[in-house]
Amino acid sequence: ARLTLPIKSPQLWWPNGMGSQPLYHVTVNLLDKDGSLLDTVVKRIGLRTLSLQRRRDRWGESFQFAVNGIPFFAKGANWIPADTFAPRLTGDDYAQLLESAAAAQMNMLRVWGGGIYEADIFYDLCDELGICIWQDFMFACATYPTFDRAFMENVRAEAEDNIRRLRHHPCIALWCGNNEMEQGLVGDEWNDRRMSWSDYSRLFDEVLPAIVDKLDPGRGYWPCSPHTPYDDRKNFNDDRWGDAHLWNVWHGKQPFEWYR
Image 1 (tube, helix red, strand yellow):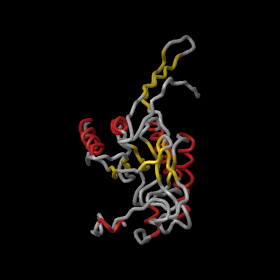
Image 2: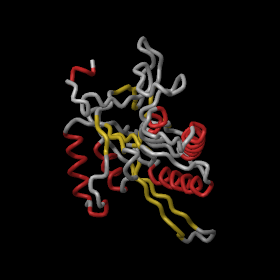
Image 3: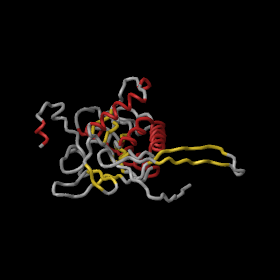
Image 4: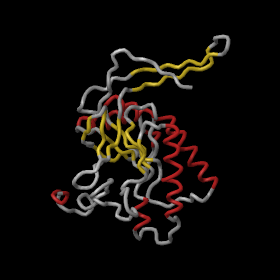
């Protein structure tokens, strides 16, 4: 069922540093034919547009997010599980970490595909703090048996459940298929080649984007990070387009000026 409701003088939601984060409570009641209450769902939403802009430019193609039609520079970090034993985390733990990120002028975090789909409190706080979320699906640095029907049924169920759970959050900026799997397919990490490009494409070019398009059509999908959207994908850190994982400074000990 779809319902359109007018909002008088709507207040827009903005990322950290660009404005405020007004949130609206939406309550939906399900009644039977006699008017008796059967169920109630309460969600908190924010009003905004948030998209990934890819436009040809003099270097190749841009890769920039825009909120409410205004491009902005995504400043942030990867988010990994904050504790090896996730149930040990409290709301105060999440608040301390995310408030610190906001105080450091971050406006985006990437929920890394080698971790977990985070608890509801994480996304609630990001809504309140104006921290946008690049949300990976939970696939990373490994091969997966996409030829196995039972496995793929589990994948679909997991993706659908989490999209339905999270799609009302204004902080969600992008769904991303996986972490560094294209890099592994191209390089020498996976010498036994347990996953072919066609197996990879079945999951990340067909199944997941179709689920996103069905359940959350207002948001973008990106198949992998890093990923180059042109040619044969083998130059996964191509500086003309797409996104890149550049290890040379933090891991390779190059000076910061290397980024120039």
